Every structure is written in C-alpha cells, then in structure tokens.
Length: 510
Image (cartoon, rainbow, N blue to C red):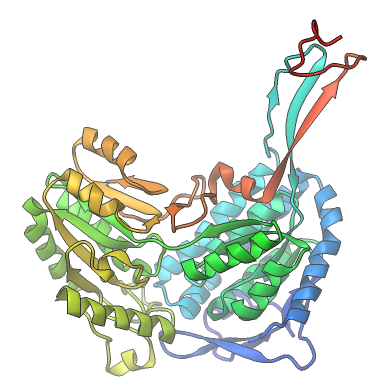
C-alpha cells in the first residue's frame, strides 16, 4: 500500500525501500496475495522500491477503472483539462530536485541529466496544457451553397502507455500529458527497473487533482501486463517506446484488435564530421552524444563518420579527452558518466564489445570497471572502435557507451554509410559549408537532423520520431503530439433547406 507522500529531499536520500501498490481508480492498492519485485540503484545496489508484479486480473481491473472514467473526462472542457496539467507541472517543479535525484538513483544517469529528464517532463506538460485552448481542427469551403464544413478532434478512449527505463519521467509524460489533454483516460505501465520513477510521476498527477480513474498505474512484466493491455478490447490506442523486437510484437498484437499502435523504437545514429568541421565544437558534441546517459539513448551517437583529412587529428582529440573523463557516482556533479542501468544491460554491452574486438580495432576502453565503489555497480569504460562500415558493431544497436568510428573519403560516401542501416531516428553533420548542410538535411534518412550539434533528442515543441525500424511513422511531442491520441471527425452543416448532392452535376441529375 502506498502510504503518504515523500518530500523532495527525502526522495533523494531515502535509505529504506518503500512498498508501492497499483494505482487504480484514484487509490493505491495492493491485491491480496500479490508477488513483488524490487528496483535497485545500478551504481551501488541500493534497493529503491518494492512493487506489485501485476497479473492479467489486475490489468482487467485497471482497464475497467479507466473505461468507467472516460465519459466524464471526455466531457470535461479541454481548457479545464489544461488547467489540471498546469497544476501537475507546478507540483513537478516543486519536486524537481528530489525527482531528479530519484531518476539518477534508479536509472543511473548523472545528476545533471536526471534533473534534465524531469525538466523535459515539466516543459512538455506545460506545452500540452496550452493545447487545451487549441486542439485545432480546420474549416474548409464547400463546393455547394449554404453549407459549412469543418473538422473537430475527439478522444479515442482508453490509452495504454508503455514506457522504457532510460527517460523514466520525460517519456511517460510525453505520452500521458498528450493523451489526457485530448480527453482520453490512461493506463500507464512503466519499465520494471524504473517503476519508482513511474509511481512518483503518478503521485504528482494524483496530488494535482486528476480525477479517479483518469490515470492509472500497473506494474509488472511486459509478457504478462503488457500483453494483457495490448489485447484488451477496451484499450483503443497503445503508445509504446522500447526495443524493435518487442515493438514488432506489440504492433502485431494490436493489429488483431484494429487498434492504433504508435511505436518509438531503436536507433543507430550517425554524426558526420566533414573536413571543414569546427573540431573543438564537434568534440564536445560527440562526447555528450556518445557517452551521455552512458550511451543508453535511442538518439545516442553510436557511429562517428569522419572525413579522412581530419580522422587522425579528431580521434586523437577524442581519446585524449576520454583519458580524463570522470566515471563514477552519478550523484556527484563532477561525474561525466555513471553506470549502465542494470546487470542485463552490462552483460549485453560487454557481449557486443567482445564482438567488436574480433571484427574491428579497439581504440579505447572496452572493459568493465572494477575495484572500490565500482564493484557495487555496473560501470563500463567509454569504448571506441575503429571499424569499417558493415560490421555488426557499426550496424546493430548496442545501447551503451560504445562508439564506432568509420573513415570516409567524401560527402557522398559519408551519406551512404549514414543511411545504410535499418534505423532512421537522429542524425547530424558538422560542417561550415551551408550548401552541404542543406544537402544533408535532404539526404540523411532520419526523422531528425542536426547541423553542428550531436544526435540528441528534440525540444518538446518539435516532433520526435523516426523512419525505418525506428518506428511506424508517427511522431511524439510538438504540435503533432495530439494526433496520436485523437480522432478527426468531419462535420458538415447544410443550412440550404434542400437536398444537395456533392460531386453530382445538378444540371444533369434531375
């Protein structure tokens, strides 16, 4: 049972794990006989929270609560829904320090990024609150007299939001805030290893006055809870962010119920470094793009495509900088990179590093860090491979602090290498040639292209998403965020007081 509310300072410093139930119909409940799982701090093994392992019966109960709450929430004026979201943002600002520390404790990203994760959530909630006074449709002229044509947006119903662990407050709020402003009710399933962040997000909405049943939380495995959510006929839209294989399964299951399924999946993001690039600027960008969040971002810079004229110089700059790159306690503001998120992540990344050692040249790193405090967590060295295009490490998503560096001879080769992967999320080019920059905007196959900046994500007022195996074509955030969670209704008002037939010649149709 969820008891009380933790103060922001306690969120960041609590040593005794708290138990959380499910949040159903405005109440924290623990089903009788429920099994539990724990989340742990990847830096030191500290238990962060204990959570219910949800069952299919729990999913049925939580979806039923959202289904019951939908009619009243749909009828709540959109500006009023926006006012509630503004209150959510206000309360999240008050709790930002504690929530940021919680993100760092549960996920492992350094504290500046933990706080940034929360700030992104705040920014997006505020942005979506404004949609309560927009939610634009359109009016168009009719081809007939005395006829008025327009479109309006309507909610879809119950929405399932299934989110990953790498942005445990930002991504849930991308989905939840957009779904709620459109008038949907939500069942939220956070990633199991950042369930505490998910629970605290729900707590803020609860405190802000979101009515019972409008936002609900269920925790547990994707194989049980996730599949039950996707298969429930009362769930009309599924918004999923995660891995390609799981996303493909979600898509197929959702299609069986003719649901709208929105997928945000993987990336193998390139930074192209041309011979005229500002190398010090690019150095800062590549370090953050490749090793921020320990490389555990779908937008992480996992490939560095470098023109041969600056290849040796830049690689020397990069390895020299990494030699003094601080790795350790992510709560220490001086730390540049913390642990990877879990033992499973560590194992997967180390397996890819072994693959890389067989097919490429290891230029830097390549080991698990041990000794002292490192032994309590999942710390890896930032790793650089010099490789040819076409190796596994140059084409497969690793999702860790591993950078593949590829030498190219010209712009055309750089673009070919950048595009010749299964993903298309974020991309970047460093060049002082404005003509070449604009060519890259057209040539790079990605949902996002940066010029003279790394492959980070987008600002909240910009659409986010990709092509190819990165997803199924939709976009989150920005002005298009509401499209995922609303239906367009076409409305025609004929005030001619007679039957009119569009596309029929009135002179011949007697």
